[in-house]
Image (cartoon, rainbow, N blue to C red):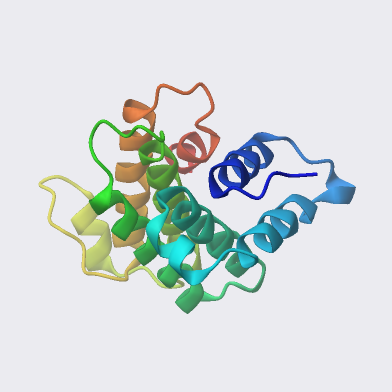
Length: 168
């Protein structure tokens, strides 16, 4: 029986996030995390940074199978808002996870952006100009930027999403 205190629920969900899943059970962990979050009150979801992170995490991953761009962008806003509010000391260790999530979001949005213009290609080459928002170049540049910052800010040995974004 899982203790109902919000801190225990957040800790349990973060543990589930780190466990590898067998292909035949893929999605079961995400559903379990989503179900546990759904039981929490709106006030808890707003006031607890750990729960807010889990809401962004589950919203992001639940939007991917259908390539739901508005839902992916909504998850991006949740991550950014949480990052803006977290202290640099980051006692919960959420900053690297938020940056990994943002890197993954922009990598996904880059792949979902179908066309690349000649202007975008020029913007990716030195001297660097800032790419236009919502272009492939914009999302891929942000994916790399957040990926680097996640790897650099993390004291954790598991930065798979950040490394994936950097490799792609």
